[in-house]
Length: 200
Image 1 (cartoon, rainbow, N blue to C red):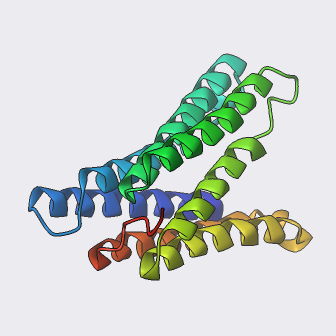
Image 2 (tube, rainbow, N blue to C red; image 1 turned 60 degrees about the vertical axis):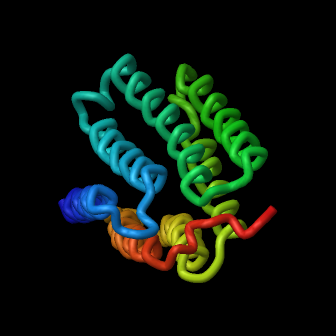
């Protein structure tokens, strides 16, 4: 029950950030761009798809399960591409980053049809690589926010190994709360005007 609550809290937080960015963009506020809005919007969509895919009505039926995970994988490819565009990365980096994400997500989609229903670690790896790339390309509060997202994912992996937490899925609750904070830092960093790649 708690897991569902914190998961919903994260979804509501992402929705709120996306709406606030859209409002700021509509008002012409400085530093808010269409690419940043699209990035947050797709992250929000991926979050809701991720919640739906775990519902029994989807998870217990292979065709629905596979369809939703394919949709999530494709959305992650677009999300990572738009994120690199949002930080104004060089076109070569955008292409390379998108290709890496496409390769990892594509392989995951291929493994979906195996008896074990695939290994989501490939999609997670694509996202962490993206976070790392964004952290390397940015500076100041924007870089700090990306590092916090990386740390949140690393901590989730570590906490999952703690039996007392994993048995009650408390590691997921902690993870959701960390993501709410990290996502807020990313949203708050927009006003710094540093959503710009510092190289090449």
